[in-house]
Length: 231
Image (cartoon, rainbow, N blue to C red):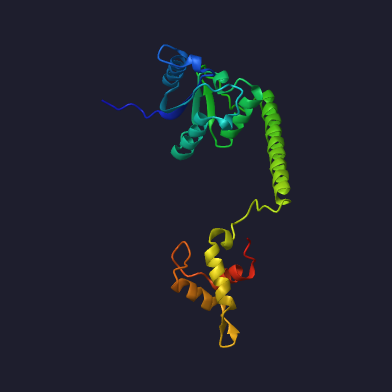
């Protein structure tokens, strides 16, 4: 007997907006699951994974949802490019939120299809195209606003003398190491100061090594020695 043709794969996305709709005696997830499975069978799709955001408002940003985030991780790793939902409201109730989420999936080459067969990622509809352009503009504006807000916060903190970004200095990582390097640099050797390379060897002999177990480079020692040891 001939085997059945291999069906295209898809993942299911479910969402309930209230914890009151969740439980063995509730039917929200059961209804969604049944609708999705029924469509998958009619469309010749195989549901290979399910992602469920429990008690998540339809207005909550797509990127803040744990279930949706897990869905993105899954499709990025397994090559599945179809997401099935019961209806558009399960994906998001707010139109801008919905379109922002769809933009995320379109960018990954993913289709979002409802159990009634409506392709939410369809781009032939001029209205949908316009909405995605508007939603994308809002997303970019919000991102720019957040970046500016964070930069202003860093500037205010930096003005107080507090380091707020960048790599931690050697003195911050290991104060004793830097103090020893400075001491060795001050130590006279035949009327001259010890070289950075010689200091690195001396530090290594006392067990001061990098995270990979190697002696510090002459450049690293120079940074330790030349920069002030903050109190």
